[in-house]
Image (cartoon, rainbow, N blue to C red; front, side, top):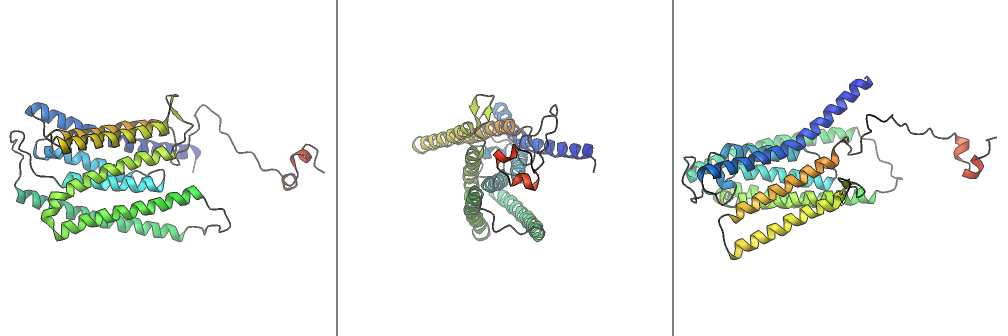
Length: 330
């Protein structure tokens, strides 16, 4: 394979990676725009984003959230625990999109309303479609992983244990167990108590999705190279911690206000805050990762010559001390 072809293929992969990141931003921006346009046209704001399911914004709402969720699942995290959080957040985003809550009577009917029976029929169809797709994808992933394990070289048992990597895998296992419990609970509601599933599933999915997105920010704040700075001024790790902290604090404040002084627009405000903070975080991380390869390592500049690793010293030189190496080898 020629070097030119390899370089072109590497750039293709890199740009695909970048486009995948920006698809998530585009999907949320489209969702924002759809809600804003519908609210301005109708002269009325609904109490939550999901309430726009029963308006002309339905198509963009459902399509945007499914695209956002699918991209989160497809995106590969830099560490196992982030990968779990991304996959879980993406799956919950899809459930949020296909399991609506009841129709709001805050605004004048737009003609997009549905009866409870129609909503129930749509939810049953959507969830079964999601379950079939999930089963196929899981089977394919397990098959590929099994094939990969067969070709894997046995690890060197004498090599030292990488403590951070070991800790990361253990954390990922714990997070996976928690996510599986949530998913099994949702599945149990769907199969055993479908009427309660429609009432509760959306809230559970939305809340756990927010927790998972906060987890993505926290894990990256923990993992990021703290020597790199945004615009040469702010440490990326601190910037990510601030995003996660702002999201948690604002969510707590809005929920507290909603509990003591209920307001129809507070939930909508919270949902828009969550998406807005995540968009900001995702754009900043895209800046951090720009120009890096699949291993998230700085890529060499096109203007700099390729640097080759120094050749190892001859065996007799390797055994000599630095002082002895200043003398000619005999």
